[in-house]
Length: 248
Image (tube, rainbow, N blue to C red; front, side):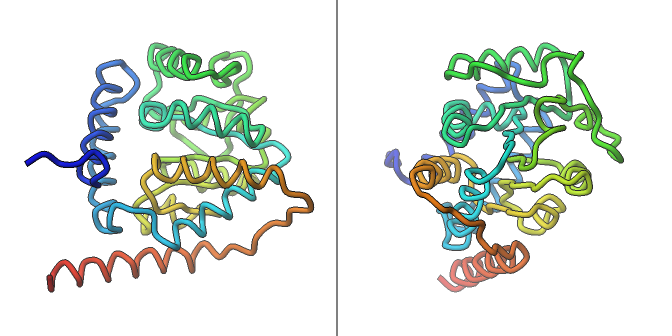
C-alpha cells in the first residue's frame, strides 16, 4: 500500500532521505544522523504535527526576530541539509545575518554548507573567515568560535538543533536565544528564551509566513512569552498522545 505524500510517515521518510543525502554531500556527520533519530521519536510523541503550544512559540519567535536590532541565524549541518531555502528566506524577511557554526568543524564541511546556502540565494555567509573569529566566553567546544560580525554581536540568535552548552553560554553572554528542539526536557529547550517544540521543517515554514506578516505591521511590541509554561504544555501534549495510543 502506497503512503500518500502528505501523510506524516511519508513526510518523515522524506526528511530522513534529505539528511542521508546531506551526509553523502558532506554536510551532515554521523552524530547528526543519530541526533535526528532521537528527534523523530519526539516528533512521533507530539503527533507529527505543529501543536498549539508550538504555534504560540513560533509567533513569539517571529515577533522577537522582527523586533531584533541584530538578529543572526546560526546554521549547522543538519539545519542546512533540511532547510537551506527556508534559512535564506527567513534571513531576508527579518534582516538577519547567516552564520555557519559547527560542533564537528572542518573547512570542507563549512564550504559544502556555504555552497548549498548560496545555491539557495544567500549572498553573504559569516563564519568562514578566521580573521573575523571571536570566542564565546565559558564554552569549551569548537562552537565557541563565532564571527565578530555575526553571533558575537547579535542581540537575538536563532539556533535550531542546538547543543545545550552553547545555549547556556550564549545566554550568559547576553544573547536572546530562540531554538527548535523536539525534546522539551533537553538543556537547550530548558535554557532558551523561546523553544519551538516542533519539526524544524514544519516550524520554519510557519515562522517565515508569520514573520512576513509581522514586517507589515506597525508599533509591534514584544510578547510576554513564558518558555517554561510552554514547555510544560508540550510535555502534556506528549503524555496525552501516549495515553491515547496506549488505549487505542
